[in-house]
Length: 122
Length: 234
View (cartoon, rainbow over the protein chains, first blue to last red):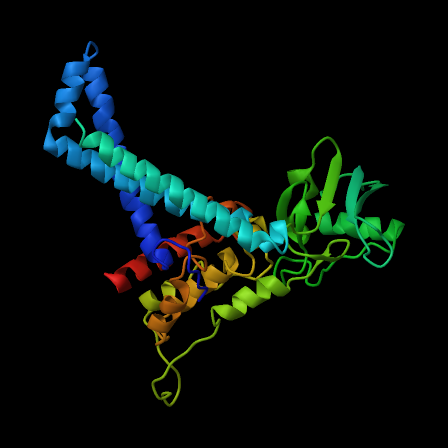
């Protein structure tokens, strides 16, 4: 058993399941957006606005945004624990990795709050 | 034929270098890479490499042959040669002791971690623990591993985290004991593998499957372990 305090769920299985489920949600959301763009080639701002004023679409977008944040965090954490290690960077690696992870978390948190603000300001 | 061999003696060399040796191949014969190495050693007896059974059973002579990991003793020169040149390097990712000889310590440590032996708490029967032919068939494609390390040293996840990720060879054996109907420690074994590194550092790129000299499929075994972990947790 290898322990790591900074992973998403502190369990490889949990992270793996979240990664897969969030990927499926993002795929469905991207296909949905693609369908909207392709089916309405001459869509105007008013129509776009009306679409996102619908509560169901807002909730769907929020789920996609949450999925994106969880998915990105697990991915960035994996990249950090692959490449920002004492084997690659020497003694300072743990500090560098922790800083990188904090920065990723901060960016994702800002994106999330900003996204919620955009969705509910319509 | 030109043979380029990785040379490094930490006692005398500041850094590794490639030594080129011109070898005259006998007419009408397709030698194995190990035979070519022997011819190189005839030219320069200081070349160091491991070998034993010379027939793909002991797993001693795993090395990187023209960029691909394999057993030198069962790799015909004709199947790997490019531009009449053969390049031999040690298995990647493990510390070099000398020339083509690597320190397999990290690899064996991961193998040890998965407890590669049968664990059974029930009292031993008078003669032996029986299995049905179907139960026995589940071990096919798992028990044949010879621990040559060709797969694990071809795996980027093992290169980056050799101390945390068990690696394809170890996980193939982990599943060999998880699948064994006579083993009663399935739950403890799975609990030891649930963390973010031991199994889940595998990203399924199948580099292990591509190079296994015995034609085994560690990626499939890892998939089975994931399914067992999933079933245990839901």
